[in-house]
Image 1 (cartoon, rainbow, N blue to C red):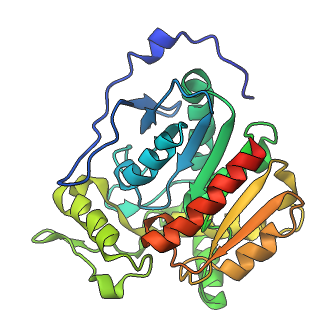
Image 2 (cartoon, one colour):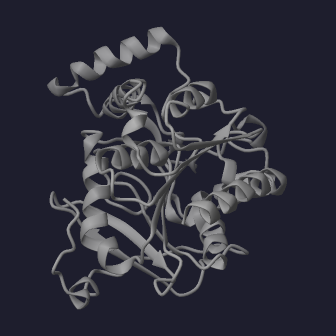
Amino acid sequence: MFQKKSMKLDKLETKPKAPLIEITNFNCPPDGESFFHQTRDGMELRIAIWNQSSSKGTILLQSGRTEFIEKYYEVILEFIQRDFCVALMDWRGQGLSGRVAEDIRIGHVKNFSDYDSDFEEVIEQVYQDKCPKPWVAMGHSMGGCLVASTAAKNTNLFDAVILCAPMLSLRMPFLVKKILLLLGSISKIGFGEKAIAKPEWNKEKGWLERPFTENEVTTDLARYERTVMLIREHGDLAVGGFSINWAYGALKRTNEMKSPSWIKKIKQPLLLLNATRDKLVNPEENKKICNQSSSVVIENIESEHEILMETDFIRGQAWSAIDKFLQETL
């Protein structure tokens, strides 16, 4: 599928420029290129690429559910300082990519496979021309799930894979999973966009801010407040809650990943950054799944879900593992 296209580079340059947002004391890394790519089904995806002249290769970095490019400025800069090209896109339905649901604030996708198609199309039509190889595909949470899915389907596409607290599993009571699978199976009759978890938003106050003490993703106050400030000042970046279709697709995909043969389809060197205090995905289940691969390195990190948005000490452990893995595999 991923043959080099004959598309000329100057044709790609005509894509509409996309904004990259900054807030006080949190600037966009310099010399990046950002634009919108229109998919085959007409969805606009926001893409950003930095350091395209790199001789070391490219980190194809994919974010988690509800996230957006701006949240990763710090991580992008750290990869640039290691002389990598870095490429990201906002998944459909979030960030500044086109929204899918009528309620634009809810996390929704018609079919989970739409994410796969978007990623594969961007690789084929954009990254092939703009991003130097070797390629390291790296994904956090839902992004990790989708990076892993693409690596399993296209075994020669990436040179290495890094999964950061990936959504290979979900922390959810068994009965709730069964109910969601049932709801999802009948969503074709018109319930797919219905919210299971509603966005924390109202007309008067906009996005409602969860206190730091109630958050489940990081123990770092400054980085948590930085994300809150981005959303407070630029609410169009945010989505919240999720639809029946999203939940059904996520459960179906993670159920498929439990098969012993699934992870073995990923032939590339694989690094799992496993957040041992994760409250959203199941770190023990993730470790069990990845241990079935003969090419995996597992780094257990005492962290909440967002390892790269954690304290300097925790992030330092993650970066040590990433640096060692890249040095040994590229």
